[in-house]
Length: 611
Ligand SMILES: *[C@@H]1O[C@H](CO)[C@@H](O)[C@H](O)[C@H]1NC(C)=O
Ligand SMILES: *[C@@H]1O[C@H](CO)[C@@H](O)[C@H](O)[C@H]1NC(C)=O
Ligand SMILES: *[C@@H]1O[C@H](CO)[C@@H](O)[C@H](O)[C@H]1NC(C)=O
Ligand SMILES: *[C@@H]1O[C@H](CO)[C@@H](O)[C@H](O)[C@H]1NC(C)=O
Ligand SMILES: *[C@@H]1O[C@H](CO)[C@@H](O)[C@H](O)[C@H]1NC(C)=O
Image (cartoon, rainbow, N blue to C red; front, side, top):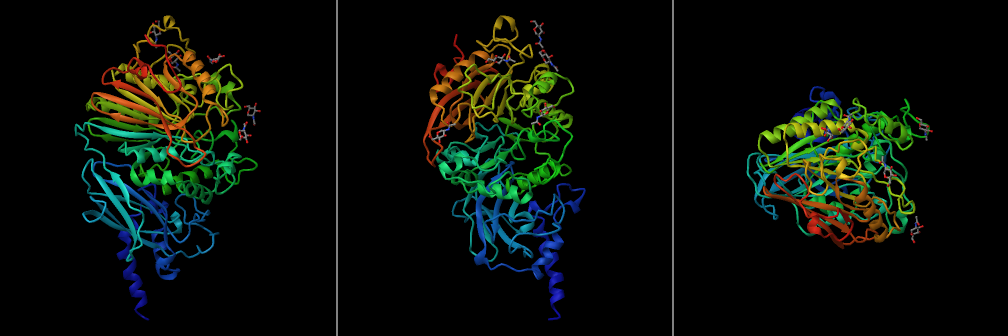
């Protein structure tokens, strides 16, 4: 018995190397280690807390991988005695929880997981392995970095409970090409806006079933913060919790609900993801200091919100980092998600945060006229000065090093867009006129971006966005007015017919399931009528489609980028029925949607009248 303290003493330091290998325990700031979960305190519970019989432990929500580099990738799983989220709402980022609510969680002993990465799906040729602990403090999530890998190589990975053969599902992943490799082909599937109770995430499963890409890019609205919708019960889907989410526990529960969708699980299991958030990972129409319900007020609390906006944002960010397979980008800035990755000399990807990080007041629905009156103010910023300076440097550096394509993942649409139409019976209701919640409400930010590209002769720019639940493909241009008229005669610097004056292409994708322009009972014909109008009223837009839910794929080579859009036939059940909507090409050096647009033929939506 007297040996016990000595054993304890020996056990903790030996174990500690494995503690820091779970990235979710770490402080978001390397200069402030105390902001992390107190590993020592968790480790002590090894000896005093309940230890779990491996029989009660489960890999509750599959596996995931993400943020690949040429030599490493992030691996994720959740190993827990409960499927439910861990409730330690006393903790904000970095603070050891002050109190505990949930059942069985008062003294969670840490749980040990082992992981392996192999070249073969039989897991025989193991090239990297490790061990990590998890506990209720981090909602039983496990997030590790597998290092020492070969570039642009497919790997398989699996977790197991330490000293047990209880295993997670087998995951598949892929590293990025080495920075200077003239790799000939890289492919991405691009997604945004998945409202769980509006439909099944069939779109996520499609790129897996076809095995058609190397990586998944997610532009945000991965979750929604709302309560249940009327549509949910009609299709057998229900949010947990069933009301709007505010606390850390609630955000965790929401991620846990999402990760029950089989097609979402399939995508995470088979592809490394590179993700960024949009507004709904926190709340509707967030900007730096608020969201829609706060209107443009100094309030941080409002009557029926149980926590302040700051605390809510902190909770949302923490749950996102716990559940998503992404790296902590900046060790002194836990809100930073904007980052870049190279895919050889072929593609330099820059992922932005045009929502949460540092953007000025947005159109929160009640103040459209006010935002409209200030949209052209020079002081307004979409990204904040720090991110913007970094972004412009990324574009210049990429150009200087001779990467063929610059791929920019924005949340919101960059191009000028007037979403409205005279058909009041068709509109889903939430998109009208100029979308001031996009770059259209931050004209100075857009001008500076375009100025940087034009004045430095940086070409081959491919911008991506989601957010507006419909499909838009545009020449990337600086329209010579804040209220452009489509008549090219008044726009000598851009010719919509030939694409002259354009400096790249923007691809905006529809939602995985979120409601679109024509509403749930809208028909293809109504979507078509709307598209026919929108193509006339938006000078740089070359194709618009406003009916389908879906996704798109990008296939890069040094000669040409091919983009293919897909629409899902029916999201009210789980199925794999899709329609190929349109195909586009962008040739190296052309800096515009190749004419004739979509080969002159699309399955739905409208293209600009061809020459
Ligand atoms: C939002 O604020 C504007 C003024 O800034 C006011 O006119 C409007 O009534 C407010 N709406 C709500 C719902 O609070
Ligand atoms: C947007 O288009 C509608 C017609 O669809 C038009 O009435 C409105 O004036 C346009 N808005 C702007 C700012 O051009
Ligand atoms: C942005 O550029 C347009 C077109 O040149 C111009 O009309 C507008 O005033 C500019 N706005 C700002 C804030 O730079
Ligand atoms: C706008 O068009 C005018 C007239 O063609 C031209 O002089 C001016 O340089 C253009 N401005 C921008 C920002 O492209
Ligand atoms: C759409 O159709 C469903 C099923 O027929 C119906 O329950 C619902 O009320 C309709 N919604 C609208 C907005 O018309």
